[in-house]
Length: 314
Image (spheres, rainbow, N blue to C red):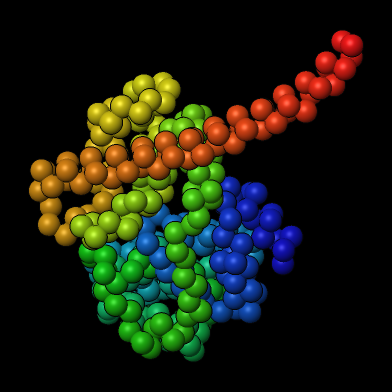
């Protein structure tokens, strides 16, 4: 299992997430349906795709929203074909659920809890009894290998609904939280165009601060750091600690990535200025803590070498 995790991390460019990947692979091996839950941008879809590739099975991906109907999920009869041929197999258009069930494939549902409750409920018998019944078409049975891997955002996100207890009970739920600071820096190095470590450090610090600020309802994912780093380097080429430079770039990056409890342009600007100041201060403290240590080491080296040099001169 450890070898498989390392292989997936390498192939799919996944930083960390060893425990989450391991749990997902174990559940997939056991034939259990998987629900990956976490905030926007924590890598739910990436892990879902990685697991699907690991089990070497074809998959069909769908993205949930409030317009995704039961018929679109399971399948429907084409009206013009019904008029000419009746309710026959030739008139039936397979949906993602009926397709993956009949082929023994993986159904990957992104943002499951954005689907209407009626659509979600179609999954119940498919998951539990491995069969669904479609009016005027008949029964669809799942072949061996059929599996559902779904992702969902937390319930408090706009546009989401709470999954029923019956549906959640049929999943193995794996939660993904935000990653460590060092892992997030590595993600920015991999996925941005920025090659300046100081810019990356401030961008990640600023992004992490948005998640703990009481005035912010929803903080930024790592995408905020990636965009900030890219924009700052494109604008200035190299790091500087001018707060106005950072405010301009951060304003572009974070306007769509954070959600305030009570939004106004003035409040957004004031809050961003406060967070940018703190991020620059954190970065400055880090640099200051490294510099004295380096100087001390140099002085110690000089003290050690000097007597030996003097002795040689004598």
